Length: 62
Image (cartoon, rainbow, N blue to C red):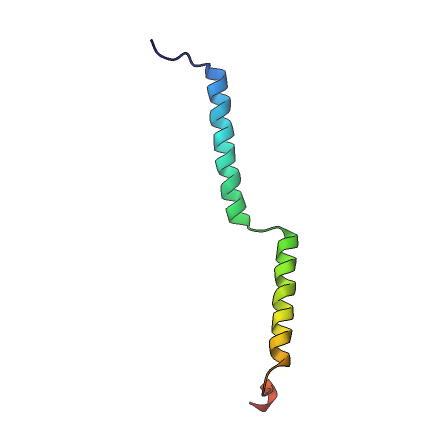
């Protein structure tokens, strides 16, 4: 005989799985947190300032 399935539990399990898949898609779609974006922006700014400080010729000379 086949396995007895509680339809209510199966429906809830399927909804949880669908919700988890939707949440994962949203995380990929919307990216990072505000704190992560600010940290990356600060790192880029510091890197650009460091490179500009070591530039041999200024942009105005060109």
